[in-house]
Structure formats: C-alpha cells, structure tokens
Amino acid sequence: MASQVSGVTDLNATFVRPLGFYIKGFNSLQNTHYYFIFLLFVYIATVLSNVILMSVILFVDNLHTPKYIAIFTLSVVDISCSTAIIPKCVDAFLMNSKFISYESCLAQMFFVHYFSAMESFTLAVLAYDRFISICFPLHCHTINTNTRMIIIIVISWAIPLVLTVVGVHLITHLSFCKSTVINSYFCDYRPVYILACNDISANMIISGCFSFGFIFIPLIVIILSYACIIVAVMKIASAEGKWKTFKTCTAHLILVAIFYLPLLGTYLTVMSTQFIDTDVRILNTTLSATLPPLLNPIVYTLKTDEIMEQIRKLVRKRKTKSLIR
Figure 1 (cartoon, rainbow, N blue to C red):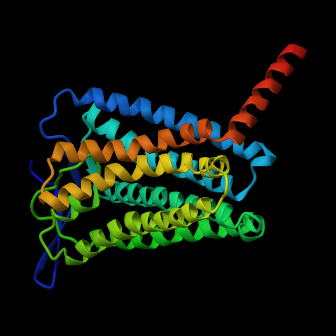
Figure 2: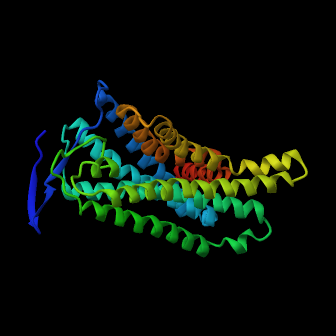
C-alpha cells in the first residue's frame, strides 16, 4: 500500500513525516466484523456499568472512603481506556475507515497507553488500600485518609503521564520512508516505531520502560502487598476470622487476575518462543484491554457487600416513591 508522505530536508537528510497510517489489524481471521460488533456491545455495557457504579459511590455518603475513592478512579480509567480503543476500532474495521491521520494516531497512542497504565497503577493503589486495612486495622483510618488517598492517586496519574508524553514525543523524531501500514488494531507504540527508517534505539528503550514501569512495577507492588496481607491473615486465630478478612480481597484479586494474566501470557510466550502469531497477539491484547473495564464494576458490585446494600437501599427508596405517587 503506497504511503502518503510529506518530506522536509534538513542538513542534507530527508525527514519524512507521513500524512497518516493504515491500521492493518487481523491478517487471516475470517468474519472479524462480528468480533468488532461484539466489542461495540462491550463498550456500551462498560460505560453503563461504570456510570452506575460511579453514581452509587458519588451519591452515597457512606461510600466516601479511601477504598471507594480508588474504585471510583478505576471506573473513570475504565471508561477512558475503552473510549480510547473501541470507537476507533469499530470505525476502522466495521466502517472500513482504516486510515488514521498522523496527529490522530499520536493522540490515540498517548491515550491508550496512558489509560492502560492507569488501569495497572490503580489496581496497585487498591492493593495498598487492602494492605493498610488488613495489616494496620486499628490505625487504618488515620494512616489512609481520603486526602492521602487522593494524593496517592494524583501521584499515580503523574508518573505514567510523564513517561507516556516522552514516548509519544520520541515518535515525532522518526522518519517514515517505507511502509505506513501498522500491524495492529490501533496506533500501538512498537508497531509504529518499527516502521521508521532512522535510529529507533531511544524508542526501544522507552518501550521497555513501558513494559517494566506500567506492568511489572505495579504487579510487584501488588504481590508484596498480598505477601504482607497473607502474613497478617495467618496470625488470626480462627479459620472463620481468616476467611472473613481475606474475603474482602477477593474482588480485587479477581480483577488483578483478569488484567494481568493475559498480558503475562503474551510476554511469556514472546520471551520463550521469540514469536507470537499476529492474529493471536491482537486478539489477546484487544480482549485484555477491553474486557477488564467491563468486568471491573460488575465484580466490585457483586463481590462487595457495601455496594450491594446501597444499591438495594436505592431501589427500595425508588419503589417507595413510586408507591407514594
């Protein structure tokens, strides 16, 4: 596919910046339009479920605690991440609009990677909340206040912001004199920079920083938090007390598994075989990017007694008002 480019000559070297890129997506899978129709329904359900959860947290005073501030933040990230990915995928693969302008590509690259990183960081923040609540039960309300949780969340938003801005800025220094066809379902970082003709060593370093900083550091924080939690739970005398305490972590652990297992599976496959089929990679990464935002509010709603109780109260109030009318 011929590339559309604009050239700028500087110091006898031609710097080529394309007008845009073409999203290639799946190579050999048939009837992929059904898959993207499925993703469209996933997006609608994601927005609705997260808005409901956010509304319950926002309008119920009893839920204005550090834990639910973090859960509210996770819902904001879920909606943002899905919005950055799914609408453009649906437009590209259902409406056959696979060309994306250079500036739009960089914008999508920034938002997808930033909010994906925020998903990981917010899960780490929730692990910290569980750690404080279980390991320091008598002092948790003074250690982990609403103000401190907000500060932690702001810091967790700032760290990936800086790294993502640097990574996307480095793309603007690349010259694309060959193909402009991206072998992915969106403007993914690595599939874009490997198309460049000039030195990509800085981009390779920042790509490694993305993987380590956005995935493995939060995961290490989560693992260390749960190691401390397990030690604290084992000190509880009764089996019932141990289960009751650890039960408060089940929703979070389910979300951690949903988010990290597909990603770790992809990384381990690439590391062990040095190859992963493009269709398998895209299918895995799309599901790992789009299903957690849908499942997060559902899991937290069903597995958290406080939220279920508040929803029941809101439903009873609504029924009572209807009967009075």
